[in-house]
Image 1 (cartoon, rainbow, N blue to C red):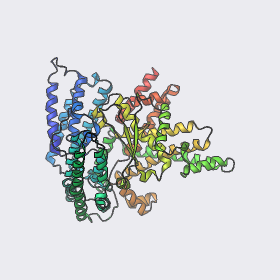
Image 2: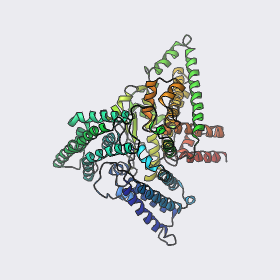
Image 3: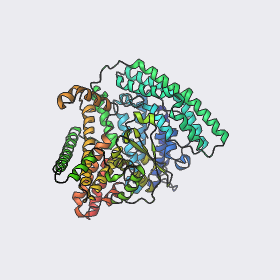
Image 4: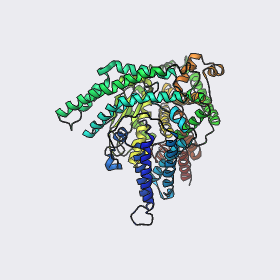
Amino acid sequence: MKKHKKTAAVVLSGIFAVACAVTGLTGCNDTDNGYNDNPLRMRLLANELSLIFLGNDAFSWNVMSVTPEQSYGYKQESDPVWYSYSPTTQNDINDLRMAFAMIRSELNKIDESALSGTDAATYRSAEYVINSYNAYYGSKYAADFELIGGSYINAQGGYVADFASAVENYSFRTETDLENLLSITLSTKNAFETYLDYASDRVKAQYPLYDYTINAMQDYLDTVYAQQDNYYLYSYLDRKIDGAAFLDPVDKIRYKIGFEQALTDSFMRGVKTLSDGLEEYKGNVTAVNASYLTSYNEIGKAYYNWSFENKTGMKNVDKAVLFNDLLSKAAACELEQKYIVNGINALQSSNTQVYNDFNAYLNGEKFLLGLTEPEEILEYLKDVSENIVPDLETVPEIDFKDMDDPVAAISSAVAYYLHSPVDEKNSTEHITLNRHITDQNPSELLTLIAHEGYPGHLYAYVNAKENGTSLLSASFSCTAFAEGWAQYAELALLEHIASSADDDLAVKYYAEYRKNQTITDYINILLLDMQINYFGATVQSLGSDFGIPEDEARSMVESLMEDPAVYVPYGYGMYFMIQLHDTAKAALGDKYDEVDFNGKLLSEGMGPTLDRAQQITLDHIASKRA
């Protein structure tokens, strides 16, 4: 789930508390109480860091842990509330810089060379997240980052839409869970109103929101408000309460009434107040000619660089060199697509069946292997994954559900897999589909479920849990590795289909075509993101340099300007993962084993940094050559 910014004061109180606590531990090195044990100290510090970063966030704790107090020492500090905006002052930033420097010094007191397995992976996770925070608050533009990097208001509903998604993924295990969710729902009105302060602060800092963003946000808010008690959360929560077996009938009625009132008096009123209040902030930018970031010049470039490093764990990547490398890879894949199409066209007369079948796949009239239903696709993928990844110890139950209609209608997410609790064994896993998109592109369901399920995100996470991943590593995995792996899972599936389809040339050629198309599409959208959000492409330059019509160019800018580097995990992560596999295959030749290599890549969880993944690859090559 998306992580939300907490107020600096709340973060700081936890940081200084843990810094003192850990310093106390490290001061016991000469005693026999066990604290001089590096693995134990790493686990203690990892749990403390999780408590700092997750704070009193009841949603995150509910999703990520079944028993957070027993498993990680979490104690609820106060009634939880929905995420509000509050300005971060320069004094806050200075204090945060000092606090994270203190935490970094505590990590340095642990001997990394004395760690192995999960403990070593946890150390690197801690190092990764602490370095990222240090880089953020250590930047001279940190105050600007807090504004231009905010997502309280955006074209997909911002934190209001996040609330609806969070409710869907929230579990009722005890009555405390209901009390917490009720408290959060009651707080939404005040929370949503603070987003107007965010809009105001952006104007004051000369970073105003574009009308495109405000209009889209209002459209979503007005759609929700118009439904009133027909809004899906009313009936959804009723059903959720009915399913809470630990409640007696009287309590169920009481909670239903309480949530109905909270949605009506708080959530809906907050939605209306925010929508009406945003009207005041229109007209500050009359036309979208460039992205937010390129409009801010050096500050925008600095934010993009930080975001790139945060998503990849890679420092000082030369964006110009990377751009050209990506361009070359996309061009090679586009050329391969042309070869395939030319080969198919040459069969129009000599092998009409192959020609017609290939084009039927291409046009979405036929589906690879005839698979169209999520459940049957999943069963096929479980079997195929034996050729790609090591077997899991247990095969988890997997449930598919549909994204609710109002959210699906405005969401760009095609699907998502939500991590099950870290401390829950043999848990049921959930994949949510956006039927607004998948129903129009059913031919993509096969690769989509490979991405989200087997052998993509779901497999990688369950495998990490079986290997004993820490809460810290699960919470702060490197997104470029995680998404790069899931993208590679799609490519590996298509490669397997192509190599197994010698008796069906249409399937063979189409699987190869789709593989190259996937690579091309994600690299091209990343290249566009880099052009618009880093190199400064404008609507005009997209027209003059690339011949893109003005309306189309403006739409490109608008769709990418709110979330800079969002495609880095997908495009660059996939490209990097391809490079790792190509390196291992070239170096090992006949000794290369796909299952063995992927097992190594995933041995440190579902999200080590990309530079760590590169080292894992080199170590694997060396061990096989020895």
